[in-house]
Every structure is written in structure tokens, then in C-alpha cells.
Amino acid sequence: MHKAPSFTLGMEEEYLLVERESRDLAANPPEAAFEACKDVLGDQVTHEFLRCQIEVGTPVCETVEDARAQLQHMRSCLHAAAAPFDLAPMAASTHPFAEWSRLTHTDKERYNALADDLKMVVARLVICGMHVHVGIEDDDLRVDLMAQLTYFLPHLLALTTSSPFWRGNVSGLKSYRLAVFDELPRTGLPEQFAGYSEYQRTIKTLVNAGLIEDATKIWWDLRPSNKFPTLEMRVADVCTNLADAAAVAALFQCLTRMLYRLRGKNQRWRSYSHFLIEENRWLAQRHGVQGELVDFGRSTLIPMQELIEELIDMLSEDARELGCETELAHLRTISQQGTSADKQLALYRERIDEGASPQEALRDVVDFLVAETVAF
Image (tube, rainbow, N blue to C red; front, side, top):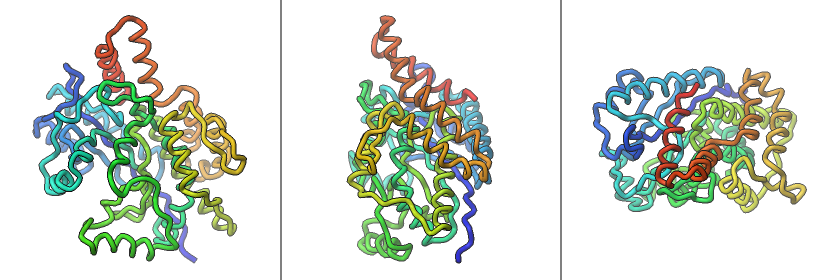
């Protein structure tokens, strides 16, 4: 019998760097701005593919509360370090009006190779995400839980949507980020494997063919991390509001523990076809937390608010054991008040109704996002 997982947490967030005056993305921010961030955060801050992006990562955390405190510290430090350069970090998965064609990628070997390999598909990648790692040290258990957790990926997406705009347009989607990201190869729902050895053999096929160097080029919504003994949830938009981010991390951590708890009773979550889960993924991408998902057992649509109440109730034991009851309960606030995408759209429509031009309204949305990123 394998040892119980640690269920430790790690979180990564990607931000966009905005010019404070124009509210547009900083196409070519000075390297000194990045160095100023690195001076205060060290290796916890890194470049991303585009020069207008920056990424932070927490150390291994025992609780969601610890991870939240780390992210709060890092957001505050980035905000302060970027200010002298008239820049600000913005936690949103797309910029309301930026044009991808004027942006440049970071001049690093890995990113140069990506740009050469993926061409326009990766040049359009002006998107940011949030990744949540949960410690599951046993390899086969990690792959088994990945298969079961796939069912919940649409729920996690719906709760995080923060990308309703693209190039100055209302996209009609709460997560346009996913529409951009899905153009890349090796994305979407994770494949199902009989065990870790089958997963390794599958990855090795592409490595041996010279298509990828390692599993870091597998960009599924959920994957076994190539660097850590964790399951890495990647479907989420980056949450503008930090409390929302903590709530979604708590949900993912609790779901992982709940499925492990079922396993101890020789039970498991029912498996559904990717075809059905993809439909829920689309509904989450399109409508977010204000929409509905399909209950496959009943073949009917259920409002997200109702599904969130079911999740909070089902995971109460796990939240208590993991010390994240407060964070999990915040899911209810997200369902009632909406995600970042809902708030962005509401502000945009309010400003248009007041007589603002679309460009003025979009600039106000950027101001809201910059402020909300550090509103703790």
C-alpha cells in the first residue's frame, strides 16, 4: 500500500505588464524593470514567453492560506517594483484591447525555439493562466487521480474566467484565453492512461521522434508535473481577485483529497467520455459561473450556482482536514458576485451606457484590473 499523498500546494500566476499612462501592454519593457522585480523576489519571478508578461511561483505550501499569503506578497512586490518604470502588473488572462501583432517574445533559447516551431499560433499567445500544483508523490496514483479529476475541469474553469475581451472586442466568451490556447498542439483534456508507465511510454514516443524534448511541452488542462511530484491544474484563467484564486486552489486541493478518500473505500468517480466533458468545458468557457453545466447522469443542465453548493457540501470533510473551509466557502461569493470576466463586462457596459466611447470604456476596465490585482 502506498503512502498517503502530502496534498501540499504550489501556485503559479502569470501577469501582463501594463503601461500606466496608455493602459496598453508594455511591448518592450526595460530589462531593468524585470531585474527590479527579481531583486525583491529572486527565483520566484521569471520571464514568460512574451516580453509583456511576467510569472511568479510560490514555494511548496502546506495550506491554501500559506499559498495565498505568498501570492499577496508577490503581487505587492511586483506592483511596487514596476511603479518606477510607469508599469503595473495586471492579473487577467487577456488584455482588453492590446494587439498581439505589435508584441515581441522574450529572447531566450526556449522561447526562440517555440516561436520558430509554432509560428503565428504562438505569436498570438497574449494570454495568462493560473496553475495549481497538489502534491501526490506516488506516480501511478497521480495518473489515476488525473483521470478522475478531468470531470471537474469545466467547474474550475467557470470559476476563474477573466478573459472576455480580445483586441478591443467583446468576444462573447468568458474565457477567450482558452480559444487562443487551444490552437497549440498537445492542449485540452488530458489523455487517459492505465498507469504511469503507459504515460511515460506515450511521452517517450514524441521525445524519440524529436518533436518535444520532454513532458513540459505537454500543455493539457491537467498534467503530471515534469518537475515536481504533483498534479498540475492548468485549465484556469488567472484570477484578478486574490480571494478567488485561493478559493479555486482550495477546490482543486479538496477534490484531489476527496477522490483519494473514495479510493480508500474501493470507490472512484464515474468515468465519462471526453466528448461529454468537452461540452461542459465549452459551456464553462462560453458562460462562466453564470451559466450551466450538464449533469451527465440526469442528462440535464444544472446552474453553476447549484453545482457550487453541491461541491461545497460534498467537500466539507476534506476542507476541514486541509484547513481551507473559509477559502472553499468563498466559491459561493464567486457564484453570487461573478468572476473577473463578469465584472469587466459589467463595468464596460456601464461606461458605454454613460456615453463613454468603447476605447474609453476599455481603458477603465484596465484601471479596474490593475487596482483589483492588488486589492487585498
